[in-house]
Length: 243
Ligand code: NAD
Image 1 (cartoon, protein in one colour):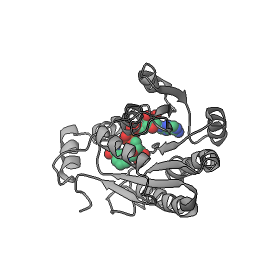
Image 2 (cartoon, rainbow, N blue to C red):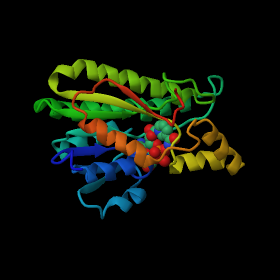
Image 3 (cartoon, rainbow, N blue to C red):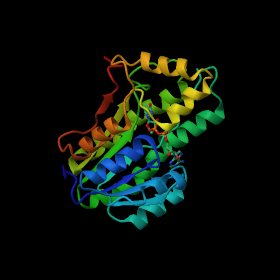
Image 4 (cartoon, rainbow, N blue to C red):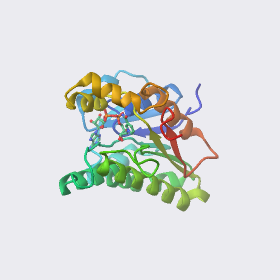
């Protein structure tokens, strides 16, 4: 379909995983896409794609974020996909991890929204999609303290932006995935020592009996980019984890 024809989308963390799949899905739906990531090497794999521009952007660098949006001009769709997973309970969490989780999972989204929203307000139209997780205020998940508390903050940010700009053509929604195949999930499985056992444990917590795919999450991002009567919602897409 070409439901996003003529729209300009910015995706953060588009080098791999859900962000990459979403950049491709937005382009397939007709949008012109700015695929951004801190990692230029993975981003390069998108550089031949029609309707996709690539640019290095570290979303934790506030000045770089402002400069990027100033140079890009009109943006209709902003998908804040960048995020980091820390393991550990409340007793394990260090100040360093906490700061990094807040900087990447929360503050960076605030900065991209601050940079993109004024332009959206000029033409009373814009869709913002923020990446949260089921591990947030949706569900308590063991050993994910810094992650869950920052992903819960993403839902609060989403509802705040939605409430403030609902009469001005701006929609803001959050996506809350369950466990999704991605390079970083692979890394977390390998880091646990016994890869097969770790993989089985991740699958076991998904009632559908399988992990989600990045393409399934990208489909929801495309839907929310064009869902003109939907705002302020946190959409679980989790294989039944939160039933
Ligand atoms: P991933 O974790 O494999 O990739 C993350 C990407 O973020 C990488 O390309 C990396 O280079 C980029 N990145 C890291 N720091 C950055 C920065 N400062 N600026 C810009 N880009 C940066 O991808 P994923 O697993 O698909 O996760 C994407 C998002 O989805 C994250 O916010 C994650 O928390 C969320 N999420 C993932 C899952 C899952 O199971 N995979 C579940 C729920 C939510």
